Image (tube, rainbow, N blue to C red; front, side, top):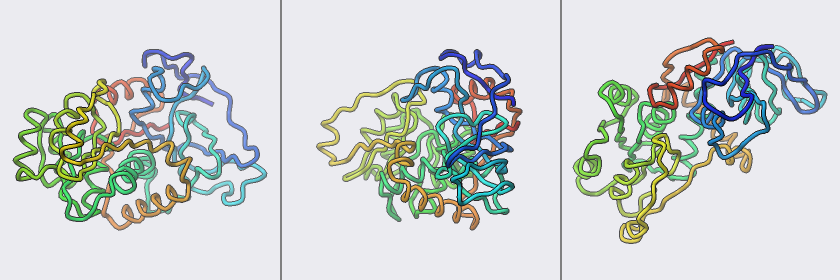
Length: 322
């Protein structure tokens, strides 16, 4: 089969579209013929050796896939050949066939497209976990979302609205702010003078929950814009700069800084993860959330697509197709 292969850690343009051994269905393994493959920011970090985990090389990156089951291991009980499913795995999704443990596979209703299913898994899954379990967002609270036009940002805006919050979306350009507004943000702001803009937008009360996948100077502005008892969610560092926190600010405003690591959550709390996905898919079916799919590209274009994603040049979700 064909796959995107990282022969070593390094620049994205060193990824190759090449032959790779087909996965085998053994034990609890489900093999899926990929129809849609989700692209995520961490995929590019992993390839460059900049992510929390470093797999042995060579490897196939990619975490999300939607398609049809083509084979099952002898211990698989919930799926059969031909079933339409989605799956999350730490590696291996940028390929024509993808293996995943049965526990990481979910059935896909006919009313959900493969593109939307991929968006639901990592992007919406991360944002939902962040706002529900980590941020404990409540109806009527004010949520500030940085990177509000990206895959997780759009998800956080829509989920925030579904949970009853007032949502402030922050994005770098007019076009990106339009994406955030269309996603449901009540107020959209740029990064210039963000501290003052947030003060004005909240009437001086500050932000109850902040969703930050950006880091850098934007985090510095957020750290000075939190309301009493707020929760500042550390999701990622798309800016490339890991900020430092003036901890005296957390003391005087009594707010919390909370880490969000969705991948570990799915492994350590599988029951809560399953409940989250049920809720998300229900919201998708009812129209409360709707992923923004920027485009669908050939699997062979993965290096080019990842370069744009890591350069913060994309909006919404990007899909690869074998």
